[in-house]
Figure 1 (tube, rainbow, N blue to C red):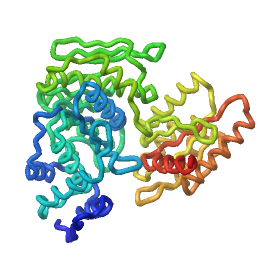
Figure 2 (figure 1 turned 180 degrees about the vertical axis):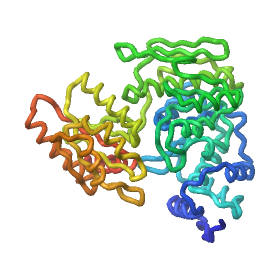
Figure 3 (figure 1 turned 90 degrees about the vertical axis):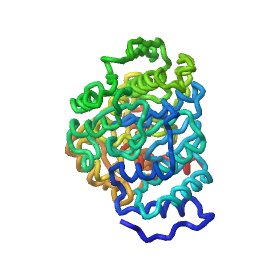
Length: 455
């Protein structure tokens, strides 16, 4: 479909361009690789000399690609990182050597794409990803790390043949596009693997479809607890090993990941397996030995907003977590329990979810974990109602735990503080902690509110 729009004039700002790009394609999500293949050819993009690592999965992608980028930087490579979605600013999606791209190069990349696009209609994700590719090519990055947007097999990131790919986890999410079974979803996510190249799966119970795809492609399957593994020690350090290409790699007493939560050990273990397996195969990397010091540096310096991130708010610890599906809810509940083992606390949750997510399943998992709940309305077409979350929570938790709703995040946090005071007065010896979760949108709103609170 050809869209009759006036392209931004010379000197237009980023927001003008993003608005224009958002209106080009009739579908916000339109899976398929043909348009991307055409544009990569027109733009003359070639990353054959670049170390390209692609990471897909239901949960853990952002943590994994952040660690991979940090590993490559610690090893002395110039890096380009694509992540999606962003939390506060669009430019978070494109990072050069750990820094968000500036508006100038981004707009210049948009102009290059527009110069060769012709009548080809591109989705917002496709257009902006191509812009990032242009920037990475212009900057001549040594390593390119890609977070899959949706699924894998037909996701725009899959237009590049990665030197190695990882599926971190396989859970139920985006059922309207990927199906409602782990087998069907696993098939889509495993589509990022390539013949003869490392195909890492960090899910401890991978669907058979993932294993079948590895075999059908002739990829080098690297499975958790078979080809690589890890053990967490009592002091929070961890040991890791990998068997690949007839060689055994092992590192003991690695530092606790900078990103908190038990699930992060699994995420880091899979990413490290991908990095080591590809590093030893890529000609551009073989002259650089794998340094354990680089791994230590990458782990300790690791930061990523919204992944069981702890902040202080009005005298309370406040955890921010973008978890938005049942698999993520399980990890969140487990991490809260682990925190309580170390330091007992009552927890008050602020939760907002998009209406196309499995909200009832999340409430079934998490409803009995918290001593108080504030459900918040989310804005926009996909925004879910707080009242519906309340109904699900009441179904799965019949106790007298207080459950209230709020129209906005600032009101929700205020109500959470009120609940905290009530809980604290009834049990003064045990502290109260807050947890905001349910969506990137929810965490974004909380971060903005915290910023305003701190001014």
